[in-house]
Every structure is written in structure tokens, then in C-alpha cells.
Length: 339
Image (cartoon, rainbow, N blue to C red):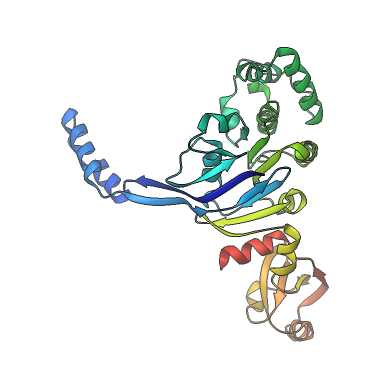
């Protein structure tokens, strides 16, 4: 049985074109008549369609960590909201633990936990972090004794012991985000959605969060979106790359790295160099200025390595080092998105 199975899932938003909004704002009349006139103009405009999620069909297994990566505006958050029951699809459907997303809407909600990057805005600011978690457990109708045991485990595992007694205004952005994550875990729902969960977290907090997720993996399915290639490679069993609401590929990280990396990748530190020198010799992936015309490059070759070294010597560019580098999920992602 799949934890999640989608079939041609599509979400289309309709909005008034920007030029129509600007036209309405430019009207100089005032009073109730203006309000009626503006509404009429907006209603008579031809609506512009925005396809946020386009014909997505994929599945997630029980016990799987499923990663989603894509550019800003690719449809990641919309997809997670659809699967959470927070939005209704324009067409298509999904099964969540064999429950129909549309027909069994309320049952689906009872099976999922959803953590968003803006979830901290729903915290009760006059309560402490611990009181917020306890209050949320009460809303979920978790028995108080059971809730306290779950809270103690989550607080200890996520490294929150030092600040659970503080109120929300006393917490840093990272602490608030971790509190939001903890709130999503205490319900112990079989499916957990994490929408860019590690935003604002420091490296130690990220590690604690992922260690806790790995503990949950056996009996849960975790779907997370991220812009961090290290997270995707390190924790996702499979990755889906999406662009303009459409799935470009779904595969295991190791397969993506093996089959879709962009050739041999090198790193070099060079002095007396300028980026414009290399247009015809290499394809630059990343470039960092180290100051005083010293560059650190990550690149693939257009010719041979010997030809490139000969070119550098001819240009009197000082070579500090040139080494082979391993392909990353970023390289695979850039290839798919750019194509």
C-alpha cells in the first residue's frame, strides 16, 4: 500500500491581469460609485490563469522520505497544501493511505501533520514554548498524560530543553521554527509534510531535526521540500524535481548523480585571472572571487585538461591547484531546470 498516490493532480489559480489592476488604481473618482465601478471593471476583465501544479502523478511509499526540489514558484508549497487537504485540486485526485483526497477529506486531515515555514505565526505569543505545545496537544485531543510524554521526547530530541520556558517574543527565528517543527511531530500522524522545514535553523539544529526524522521513518512517510542539496542527498530516499508545476523526474539521489551529472567536474584556484578569460575553454558552474584577481572556479571542460592548462600558462594565469570534484544534486538540478 502506498502512503500517497496522486493521479494527474492539477491546481489552476485565476487572477485579474496586472494591467487591469493598474487601470482600476488609476481611476480618480471617489465614493461608493467608485467602489461599484471598480468591482464591475475587475469582474468584466478576462481572468488570467496560473497553473501552479500541472498533471502530477507520483507515489510515496510507507516508510519513505520523499524530497521535492524546484525553483521559487515551481509549485512545491501548493502541492503540499493539496496533499494536506488545505487546497482543493482543479482536476485530478490523490489517495492518502487509501483515503480519497476529495471524498474522505476529513479523514485525510486526521492522517497528516503539516509544518510550514510560516507556521510560527500561528503560535500563541503570550504563552511559553512548552505551553504552546501543550495547548496544541489539547486541540488535537491528545490525553494530557500521553501528551506530556510525547512533548518530553520531542523537546529532548530536538534540543529545545534550554528555551521551552520562554515566551515566543523571547525566541530567535530558529527557535520559533524548531517549535513549529516540534508542534508538527507531537501528533504522531503517519504522514508528515515538511515545507522547507530547516529555514532559519543553524547546522546543529538541522542535524537534530533530521536525526529525529530518521527515528520516525520506520512507521511514517515524510515528504519535504528543500533548496538544500545536502539535505536532499543525505536524507531523501527519492527526489522529485519540479518546474512550472510539472514533474521533471522522480528518482533516487544516487541514480540522479550517476546518470545525469554534467560530465567531469573540476575545481581550481587561480591568480591573475578574470572570468572573461574562460568563455571558450570551460563551462563555469560556480565562481568565487577571493580578492586580488584570485578566483575559485568549479567547472567542466570544453576540451581536454591539458589544453586548459596550456591555455592558463599562455595567459600567464597562476595555477594554485586543479582537482577533480564529485557531482552534486545542485548540478543535476541545474541541468534539468535549465533545460
